[in-house]
Length: 87
Image (cartoon, rainbow, N blue to C red; front, side, top):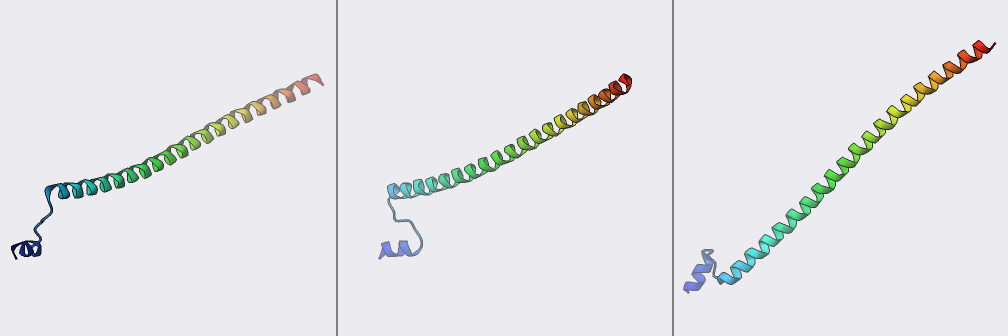
């Protein structure tokens, strides 16, 4: 009767080994969940880095295109001057 009363009042009747095993299982589950969250966070960080690198690369290409266009414009003007002078 004493044993059933202990269970009714929520007292743990598991042996220390069983309780330790349950705690270990719970800890492992939490650790696995944490690893999953960490993996997702790393994936998000990687995506953001890739976006930043892509934007930087696009900006550099745009600057290079502008420089090339200026050079083309300058060369075109020089050719026009040379053509006028040769007439």
